[in-house]
Amino acid sequence: MTVRHWRRSHAKDGASGYRLDWKTPDGKELCFAWTGDGRPSMLDLKYAKGCDVYVTEIQTEVVGISSVVQGVPPFLGRYTIDTHHTPGYAAGWLANQIKPRMFMTTHMPFDPYLNEETVAQVRNHWKGPYHFGAPDGIVVNVTPDQIWVREGILPDYPNNRAPQFDMSDGKDFVVPHPRHSRKDIQQQEIRDLEVDPNKYYPKGYKPQLMSEWPIEGDLVIPNEQVPDSMKKGMG
Image (cartoon, rainbow, N blue to C red; front, side, top):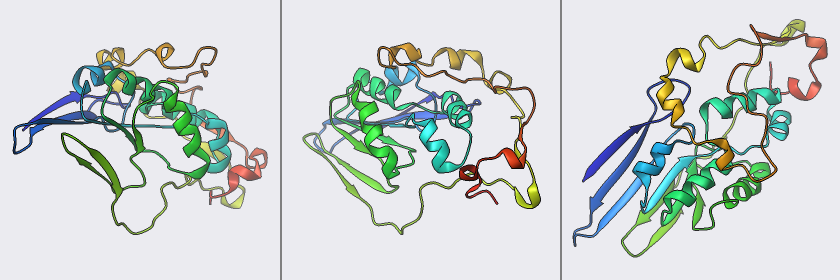
């Protein structure tokens, strides 16, 4: 059995991807690659290439809709995806380069309003076998001849929870400025390995990316200007 490790771009240094190679009792080779949380990286192509099962994280890019559901400004979703996560289009693009027997995505909200759009974004590039690695507890069985997926038995609990902000007694809505930018806590060379977004966004479509905090200091919205839809869950 062999385990390989590579660095991932996830806001700051320390995130990891792994590849596991092993042999069955009759000597046949199998491979499982898990990237975990982070931005799409060229190192994934190098180390996960040809694995039987390739699992990466995914975030579906419908930040306008999600901002209403979660009660946060759209820019927060855009900024979070572009500094921490793998967009749906990028996940499909990576799978199409790696060409696993089974492609799976995890670290995803798995909410009904997102699931069909998640598949659509992945399918823009990847047409092969694809399965959600959600809800938590999905079990994958791998043999040299077959791969099948089933759900583990777990207690029910929510997959997502809206951010909590104290808006009691007429307090303003405040999103604090991040203490560090990525360039302060992450080596430039790991960002240089991120896949060029032009490679995975469809022709004619590319969102306005946000890899830097958009303003100086904290974001402050007076309480009376905060829409009621954003106040849900904040208290």
